[in-house]
Length: 353
Ligand SMILES: Nc1ncnc2c1ncn2[C@@H]1O[C@H](COP(=O)(O)OP(=O)(O)OP(=O)(O)O)[C@@H](O)[C@H]1O
Ligand SMILES: [Mg+2]
Figure 1 (cartoon, rainbow, N blue to C red):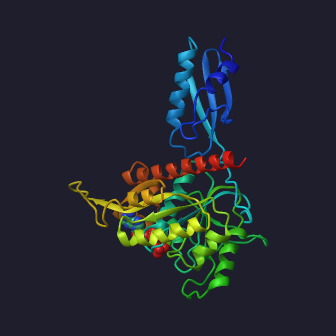
Figure 2: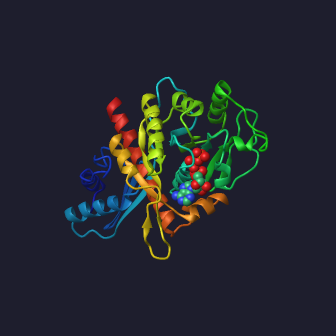
Figure 3: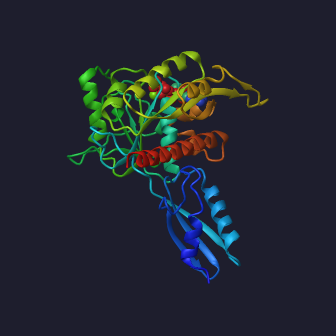
């Protein structure tokens, strides 16, 4: 008869491919069920968007089959428990939010909002609890790209965010007269951004994505300085002027001790739908150059797709178009980000405890 303890012992020989430690030490084995010769292992992942489920399944099956004779069916089931970032000393936590992630670039129009929206939606599609906060007070684009409009209500204490594609959404666009110019400056801007994050009832969130405005001015400073960010993701086109501005954004984050999760190169190339030839309209190699320069990961490259703009304009994030190449590219990037966040949170914990 196969014993549960026997299986657990074997699972202690299987490593999490990213955390490089065994499943038992990492407390990832939730349960082992044995029915006759059939075995079911339930693994608790550090993110539902884990890109390596097949590796877990393969390694678990291998170790069991190699060590126990006459095993019947082996099933590996997953659930997840996203780790909370350790927080930042002196910075107030956003209630219920495990990981706040800022999307920045330094330069305008390179695709921050596009990346933010698709990242939020793809994490939610993977099963994570996700919110997106449009921190662009002067040019809020998130509502349009998410296809959501309306006025959030309040329960008297907190603002209840709107919801679309499984993601909780908050934007200044929901609160103001859309045709009146906004003239908030310095302290007021600081106040409104903080209010946005702390006075909103986000519920329980694994990931809160913050879409930052362009530049490295007041708004970015407020966010990087006063919020408990788990990390920042930097978006750039391969173009030298974009890289130049991005460097400033990275330096600002580094100076304020916000860890850089990685770089996303957007508008990397255009592939001709007729002949398949790739044109590098904004140059080539910018993302690699930046990632080397700052010793940070290049999380992925997003090509220029007409669909991205078109679907963005009608509030249908392209990652929703499952089966299409662009959806796959965006989904892969978001899984890479989720995995990287897990590793960073884990390393933080082991370094500081
Ligand atoms: N890979 C892409 N392919 C085609 N169009 C894209 C791509 N990425 C972004 N766009 C389009 O480029 C425009 C700018 O993108 P987006 O608004 O995401 O940039 P941003 O960095 O947030 O800009 P801002 O600095 O103004 O906030 C949008 O119209 C968007 O749909
Ligand atoms: Mg934007």
